[in-house]
Structure formats: structure tokens, C-alpha cells
Amino acid sequence: MPRRQVLAGAELAAAGALLAWNAAVNRVVPSPAYVPANLAAAGLSLAAARRAGVSAAELGLDRQRAGRGLRVGLAAAAPVVAVVAIGAALPATRRFLVEDRRATTGGAGYALYHTLVRIPLGTAVAEEALFRGALLGLLTQRHPRARAVAVSSALFGCWHVLPTLDTLALNPLGATVGDGPARTGGAVLASVAVTALAGLGFSWLRFRGDSVVAPVVAHAALNSSAFAAARLVSRP
Image 1 (spheres, rainbow, N blue to C red):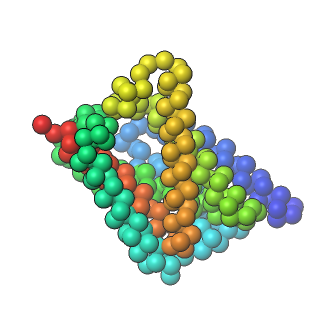
Image 2 (cartoon, helix red, strand yellow):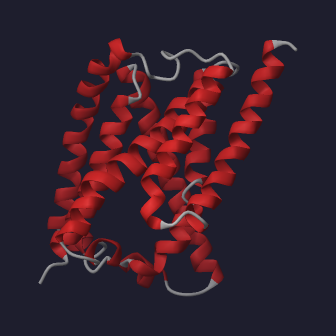
Image 3 (tube, helix red, strand yellow):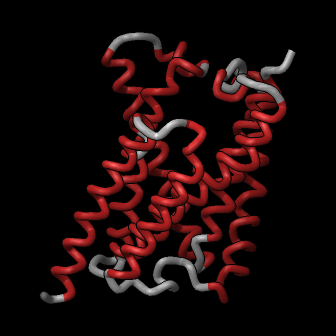
């Protein structure tokens, strides 16, 4: 079978597997198993991409380029954390963080687990391996880079449909949106658009740093700092 046909089949299989895993991890996998399950799925996706002929460098996994990826990721993480801090300090934006039940539940152990384990490993490492590693590396075998980035980022946006539906009622944004299918649908579409744009940024970091390490660091910094900020501003 010609290589292009093999790659086309692998792309369809990857997209289908991502959608199926998204449903499973949000509806079936218990919360304590989230981190190992997501990391296992990421590892399987990378192995499948390698089997389809994508090199380690094309997956962003070249060890010699990890140092550059780390530097680029840290350079991007610094302004990201600063923006989150400013958002937490300004009354106009702080209200979207106050009383976010995702961040205010549990004690110190819960907060440390989410900030240092669940978010960096279960979310940032796993999602970057899935989208900026396996999927993006696979798509660039058969498509121009711009199209590969657009497709992977769009799927990354769709990846957040179920999480948005699950958490909308747990944060102040949900109260702002209100009830009703139209408003909920609008909130979900907005979340998809925002996360797709984030996917574009993470893809840029992936190529800028020549390593998947770069978007992993920036992704972890964004999510962990937002979680920590929401917890801090919600304290009495």
C-alpha cells in the first residue's frame, strides 16, 4: 500500500481514537486514574505514530533538542503566569476566578496534587503528547505545516467540549452565562474557539522550540497558575 494511503488511514484512526478517548476519560475513567490513564493514552498515540513512520524528531521527542524546548517553554511561561497574576489582581477579571469550585474544593493536599501532578502530568504532558506530538507529527507527513496546525488545533478545541459541559456550573462563568441550551451552547462554542487558539499558540511553541517540551512547559504554567490563582483569591 502506498505510504500516503497508509498515512491517510493513520490520520483517520488517530482522530477517531482521540474522540473515543475523550469520551472515555470524561465519562468512564474515575478521577484517581486520570493521570496514569491519560499518560498511557499519550504513550500509545506516540507509539502508533512511530509505527506509521513518524520519526522521534518529527514528534518533538528528539532528546538533543529538549534543552532548547525547555528554554522556549520557560520564556513563554513567564508572561503567561504574569498575565494570570494580573487577572487575579484586577477586580474586573478576578470575579471569574472567585469561588471557582474546581479550585476551592479540598485541603492543601488536594491543591498540591492538582497543581504539581494532575495538571502538569495528566493534562499538560498528556495533551501535548497527543496533539502537538503524535497528531501534529502525523499530519505534517502529508499536509503543509499550516494545515496540520489548523486541523490539530481544531481537534484540540473539540477536545474541550465535554470538560466545558461538566465544569460550567462549577465556576462563576457558568452563573454569568445562565441556563438554557442556547446559552450553554454558546459557552461551549466559545470554549472550543479559545482552546483552539491556545492550540495554535502551543503549536507555534512546538516548532519554535523544535521540541514538544516547549508547549508542555507553557501549558502546565498556564493551567497550574490559573488553578492556584483561583484558589488564592477565593480564600477568606
